[in-house]
Image (cartoon, rainbow, N blue to C red; front, side, top):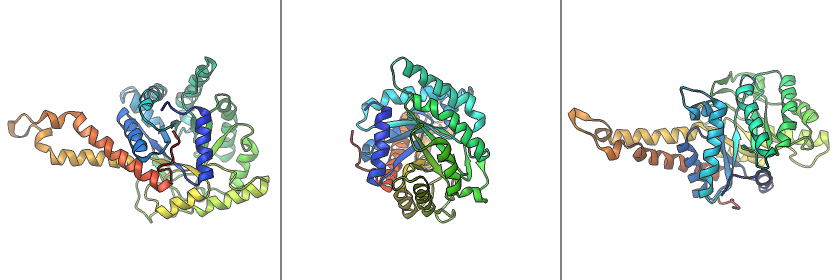
Length: 342
């Protein structure tokens, strides 16, 4: 199916919230990982989201170039073309954009979509994340307030982070031992007062409830997904809305238990970012292949190796399928398995 239109993406999120499930949002940094996500979503019968970070966009452009806006546009063009061959609907999203990357990542991409829309086309990405977690909340809100009208004009969705996700992802790093790891209702109230609840443009929120980016074992991070429900109730009471007024995003989910994920989804999470686990699945399969076929991928003791083994397609196909399997697992955890309406 073609990449989702803005209206289809909005309907996807609405349907997830109404149906009590969430979509996996998989970080990709190469054509192989894009293909792996599409394969996994298809095998799961699930729609979903493919996203790119600043570092992923740098890599897509060529690791010696680091032209992240160029890389993100090439990423999107590739995804738009190959997605036509798969029977699921997929949205494209740009992940963490901290303040230093606004000028060479997010703003050029918004401009590119503005040009596309002005010419009668669709926005290139259906949603963009502004990551203001490293700046004071007032500045975070002010920049989001500046971005939202432009995002609304291209019919896309803005993702904001309120609080701090610990750990590190693509150079955005925070210590994980302070109160900022847990968003407060007061913090969110300030955001709602500034951005509204959809009237000024649609936005989704990555609230923090002990989340940590990167690698950790289950039980090593003190997640409090019940906090999301408390914040939803607080915002609903203060602003006189219906139940669960916020569309939420789960960051830093590696190592989370099924119960923690289920409670977060029940409290309004419609999108869960997945990066570390799919990276590992991809690389682990390559490592296994190399160990099992060492005398084929290496020219051992003067031999010639085995071209069928060291052809990158040989291990690349296995890597894509292993990553796809992890995507399928994510759809089962989040409840989107078999939910595609494509």
